[in-house]
Amino acid sequence: MADLWSAMVARAVVALPLGLAACGSSGDPTGGVLRVLFIGNSLTYANDLPGMLSDLADQVAGGPRIEARDVSGPDYALEDHWANPSSVDALDEGGWDVVILQQGPSSLPENQVNLREWATRFADRIRAVGGTPALYMVWPDVTRLSFFDAVSVSYRNAAVAADADLYPAGEAWRAAWAEDSSLPLYGNDGFHPSVMGTYLAALTIYHTLAQRSVVGLAAPTGVSGEAADILQRAAERAVMEFGRREERVSSGAAR
Figure (cartoon, helix red, strand yellow):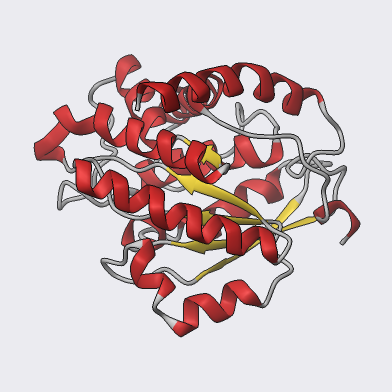
């Protein structure tokens, strides 16, 4: 694990600034459309994260539009999606610029192994149909906040193993709480995100995908301007510190 994390840090330091400067990478077309497929569970479809991501893209002049499709299922892990014909058929349709993978926190040792295995299998299949694989890091439930580090390491190691991009939403949650610990990012059940929590995840994903600043973007109803400012800064800090993104030739710019 230490070797994987060392590799993660080294590649993030080198690759992310290069990607941010590039005009031809997969998340920075000059206009055009990015087609994004989400494969996850209720942490993805709660509050319609894919729709919120598309709405963010619509606010940015000159940036890529995002067409997002979601095949997430309740309580699904990636292994469950692999066995689900609907999920596999959607992926195999092809034409996806990015496929975003998500399962539960995956903090326990056996779950970390499972996430790495299935993320790697999916990543190979995603690349076979011309897409870029990505992992959407989530968070532990509110009763297990001490597991945040393990969740973060699990998703970062899986991203390295799968040679996938990483969208560190869970780390963005921590960055926001470091500025204001009262922000209600959890929903009523203490595990699924509130609208604010989903908005922060969408900011993190958009900032990584489009390589555009999210500071100053409009927030959903119920998220104050002051809270939005904190969330936007937190998303950018988390991506800078933990995000993993490679330079790739964009197919989205030509669509």
